[in-house]
Amino acid sequence: MKTTRVSNLVSVMMLIVAISFSSATSAQDVEKLKSADEVIWFGLDFTKAKMIGSTDAGFSNPDAIVNNFFGAWNHLILNEPKKYNLAGALSKSIKNDIKTVEKRNAEVAVEGLVTYDINKLTEADLKEYVAQYSAEGEGVGLLFAIENFDKTAKKVRLYAVFFDVQSHEIIKTQYYQQNATGGFGFRNYWASGIYQVIKKMKKDYPTW
Image 1 (cartoon, helix red, strand yellow):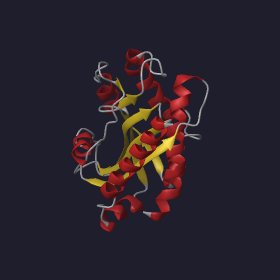
Image 2 (tube, rainbow, N blue to C red; image 1 turned 45 degrees about the horizontal axis):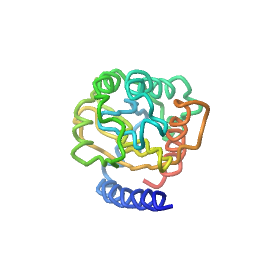
Image 3 (cartoon, rainbow, N blue to C red; image 1 turned 60 degrees about the vertical axis):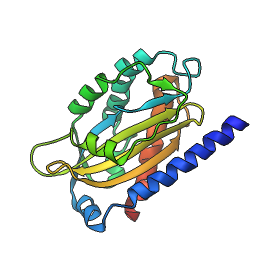
Image 4 (cartoon, rainbow, N blue to C red; image 1 turned 135 degrees about the vertical axis):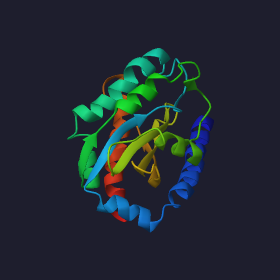
C-alpha cells in the first residue's frame, strides 16, 4: 500500500514538472508543426532511460534490454504502422529515420540501467538529444525521449519532442506517462505503453 502511494505521488510530481516544461512552447512554434505536411520520425531514444524496479521484477536481463529490446521496440513501430499510427495521430505523412537512434541506443551502459531510483529528464537533456539528430533540407522531426519504464507503477514515461531538423530548435515538447496495459511477452508488455502514448497524442494534437 505504501509503495503504491509513493509511486502515485512520484507520478503526480513528475507530471507537474512536465506540464511547466511543455507550456513554454510558443504559439508560433506550434504553428510550424501544424503547417508541416510531413514529420520525420527519429525513434525511441533510451540514452538516459531507466528501468524502474529490480532484476526480479521483470528486468532480469539488462544486457538483452540494451542489445535486443531497444531495437525491437523501435522496429515494432516501423513494422506495424497501422497499430502504432503516428501518421493518424498527427494527420501527417511520416518519414522514418532511426539510424541515429540505433547508434545512440547501442551505446547505453548496461550497468545502472535497472534501478529503484526514479529519474527525470531535464530541458537540457532534451536539447542535448535534439542536437544529435539531423536530416537533409528543412522539416520537423519527432523523437520519443524515454524517461523510464516503471514496473512498480506499470507506466511508460517519455517526452514527445518535435524540433526543426535544420536549426535543432525545439518546437514542442509533450510529456506522457501512460499505463503499460499488457501484451504477451516482455517486448509487447512495454510496447503497449508506447501504443497508449500514441493514442493519447492523437487526442492531444488538436488542442496544441
